[in-house]
Length: 323
Ligand SMILES: CC(C)(COP(=O)(O)OP(=O)(O)OC[C@H]1O[C@@H](n2cnc3c(N)ncnc32)[C@H](O)[C@@H]1OP(=O)(O)O)[C@@H](O)C(=O)NCCC(=O)NCCS
Ligand SMILES: [Zn+2]
Image 1 (tube, rainbow, N blue to C red):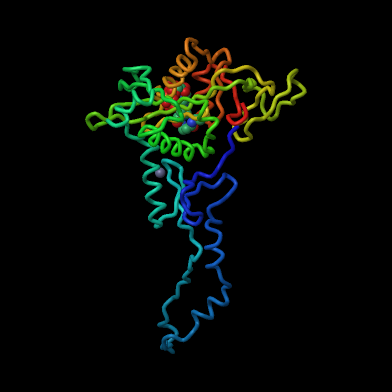
Image 2 (tube, rainbow, N blue to C red):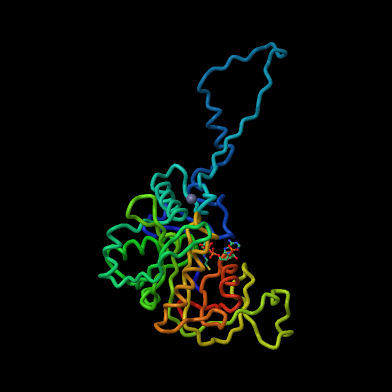
């Protein structure tokens, strides 16, 4: 399985990084150096405040004295905000953090543009349009493009930003060059408002693999005694409760990344991309998820529901770096 990493853009300095703390960490400790620096003993603080800056007249008439209110200084308040849409955390007020978040958030919601230049580069890069007029539930029609994951040029640079966005959104690590060499990327394009431009609203990375593990039926949970089953099982992911049989079985296709923009979810984009990959990844051979010929490496909650629905219980699990 791919290792989980922070939701962060690696090009940025450690101090100003957008980060998505792991579930165990809390925002109150962020950034640790800052809070440690600013905190000081209350006595010291009082002595500074108590320095006689101004003379204050004290009225002798006690009955006229106003009721005083206790004021509190909150000197350790965090400026880290977590976006409810893209789930990214960023430092409010830090310009580069906010700009990175805005860009990321827009890509997560509405996707990236596929313009004239990308369209023109299709032929020279070997990108293939493998399905046209693919109808979604909301009636919109799109097309599916397949391209080598190592492609260069205009398409290559667009894909590298797209993959970075997907990795941050999934808290996933960067795909290694070996994985990319064995992969094809399928993109779902929808016509955009602007003339002659499309939007990339869905993407899957399909990887040639050899082995994967069969998922144990959901009845096998943490409470189930392994010895009560005739076959041993392994827990793949503590939080999802996913269990697999450890034997590695021959499997042709691995899906290492799958992502649909939040504005287009539940319209059938992911299912269309998966079906396109199943039909075209191996030349002349249609792969059947029901028969265990396809595996996933990532297992988010939504991904697991999709796995069950589209794969009808036959999707396997594989380790994208050691398959
Ligand atoms: C998971 C994801 C790719 C699904 O994309 P999608 O285009 O919305 O999926 P589809 O429309 O093809 O869904 C097919 C079926 O899967 C199930 N499904 C998918 N997402 C679901 C969700 N969030 N909740 C419940 N069921 C869901 C449904 O049964 C759906 O059919 P229905 O809409 O007719 O009920 C998308 O939610 C996503 O990008 N999530 C963030 C990234 C992620 O988690 N990737 C998965 C890594 S394993
Ligand atoms: Zn956001």
